[in-house]
Every structure is written in C-alpha cells, then in structure tokens.
Image (cartoon, rainbow, N blue to C red):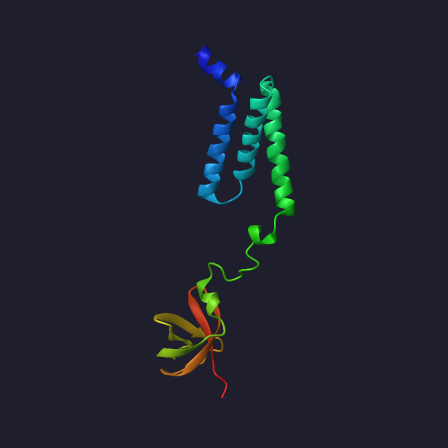
Length: 157
C-alpha cells in the first residue's frame, strides 16, 4: 500500500501526460470545451516536469490549477462568438422555425383553425394564426411554429 501512495505522491511526467490525454479525449467525446483547457494544462505540467524533474508535488498541483483556470478564463473572454453561441444559427435544432415564409398547400381542410399541410414530402399539423379554416388545395404561408405544429396564414388575394 505504501508503494501505491508513493506512486501518486511523486508523479512522473507520464502521469500528467496521461491525465491530459484522458481529459482531451473526454473533450473530443463531449465537445463542450470543459475538459480541453484542464487537459492542456495537464500536458504543460507534464512537459515542465520532464524538463524540471525536481518540481514538488504541491507546485505541480498549483501550476496545473493556475494554468487550467487562467486558460479557461481567457478562452471564455476572447473566444469567437461563433464557438460559444447559436446566434449565427437561430433556427438550429428548431426544424419547424426553419420553414417560416414558405408557402405550402393545405392537405386536409381546416376545422376550428386546425388542419394539415404538405411541406416537401411530409404532412405537418398546422393551425391558422387567425382561427380561419382554409380548404383543401388552398395555399397558405408558414409564419411560425408552436412546438411541432406549424402556424400558417392565408394568402392575401
């Protein structure tokens, strides 16, 4: 048991490199950027320990912590917005919202403001924005979505 504790109280460069590789591997799987910077920090500490083998365990932990936190804060502050937000793709993962403005044909006559429309090769549930009842074959315009139900408006004549 003492050998086990001695192994972890005097880490070798490969310990830090293995931790870094594991964290970067987790980052590749998760794609969240949460594991990237600690993984890089572990790699840096491993490289430093390789060139300076007399670094104390406490100093190694402090270096790892400081590098991980500072690099994460810098990344959060200066990363391009396209990496961290969906502003450039406001309809990402909102399939129905991607169809706003499209004109579609009514498949089943509406009753009570609800019916079905044909969009490409798919039948979608739809409701009108004003409660009107378009008839089968009429053309309507998609103006929004309520979950998976398309909101449509009649064409102005």
